[in-house]
Amino acid sequence: MRDLGIGSWPARRVKNGADRAALVYGDRVDTYADVERRTRQLANALRAAGVRRGDRVAYVGFNHPSLLETFFATAQLGAIWVIINARLAPAEVEYILTDSGASVVVHGAEHAEHAARLAHLEGVRWIGVEDGFEEFLAAGGTDVIDEQVGWDDPAMIMYTSGTTGRPKGATHTHGSLSFQYFTALVDTDFLRDEVMLAVAPLFHVAGLNTMTMPTFLKGGKIIIQHGFKPTTVLETIAAEGVTSMFAVPAMMDALALEPTFPGTDLSSLRNVLVGGSPLPDRMLRTWADRGVAVQQGFGMTETAPGIYLLLNEDAFRKSGSAGRPHFWVEGRVVTPDGRDVAPGEIGEVIAQGPNVMRGYWNKPEATAEAIRDGWYHTGDLATVDEDGYVYIKDRLKDMFISGGENVYPAEVENALLDIPGVAEAAVIGVAHPKWGEVGHAYVVLAEGATLTPDDVVAALDGRLARYKIPKDVVFVDQLPRTATGKLQKHLIRTRLEETA
Ligand code: ATP
Ligand code: MG
Image (cartoon, rainbow, N blue to C red; front, top):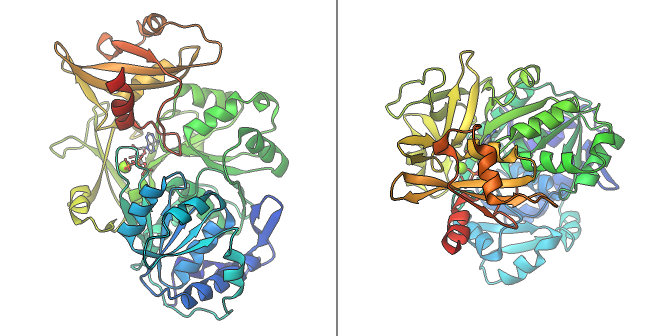
């Protein structure tokens, strides 16, 4: 069969609906025809710069149309796109460029300093999105690239979020990514007239793959916002009639705290997906009160990410659940000896499906550790209810044992967030002579809150079992988080715990 690669999408898309708006960025509107022309030119330019099949082309930057253009153009050549977290420091970007062996790096406007500081890297060409990109692209020819790309060819190396340590390069093929997109289209009600707001970072798996790419497949409109500004997001939803959006819980919380939130017309939103970290009950309630059925998605970079999805129709009924496995995905929750858990029992989520990565780039041991007997081991813990709905508990790594009982910090954090005056909370387990381990809570208070640490502990009394209640509560100004607001527990340990 002819080229099935993701690079062929723009050309396929213009067969029907060439003049429809594809990418909107501020005042800039690129139609599907524009995207087709520009990515074809960019592919030619990259080829002229020496990029060949299998080579790596990196992108580091915040959300911008050029991020997607670089993906499509790289894919057209059968080369591999390396997408880098825009928040990483130069030394961290250097690690990824060296690990992946990228020869071209397209960088966002904010990353000129990265380019300057990493100029010593040999054989790497830097192109700034606002500094040379248009010229580079315009100089490319207009030939149709006739590279045949198949589903088994690698398409993308995306590094994990680095929540628990150094990011690992999950390598996805055109097939594993395509199945993620098909899965999204099968399980969620995407329309051709979708107005999708791409405001979550596109350099993370959910921001890119759960809605943005599926919307492109349908020929809908993708509104790209460079960074997350809550007021702008609310204005855009109302003004543009945004129908779908992926967000992380921290973003949903921030939107709900905006003074304009209660007055914003949210009636166009019908396909909101939230995931990436635990969804606090208070967040689900706030949005439900505004009539928005927040669907929960669960997955990871390694699985592109879809494993579980709570369908729209279940969003209120099974609120708090991550739902059931996606169409092509087998998801199981198993005990350490490999048995499926009984309802209510806790186990690790393992998954199998065509959307699972091929492996970690350059890391055969880590790959063998993660994919065993054909099952990807997520390292996440969950329970299943009588109806087969899955509830994510926490990461295996973050669970601790106090007085012989398992404690899932996410559950304690959820309870802390329900206390009026608590804005943010993180709990870690630390060694204790009597109980083995006990919880320490780090709390950021809401503005104007007058709680004491004892008040916080008292508020949990009766709500959580004694062994779950943190033995120590420390107020801090902020908590270490990733670009998508995930709590970096290892940094809480090294930065906060050891200085406390
Ligand atoms: P690293 O692997 O580098 O430590 P990371 O695991 O945070 O970082 P991602 O692949 O972006 O990198 O995130 C996947 C993880 O996010 C999952 O393994 C899970 O722990 C968490 N997660 C995703 N969705 C949910 C959800 N709905 N509820 C709770 N946790 C979630
Ligand atoms: Mg991970």
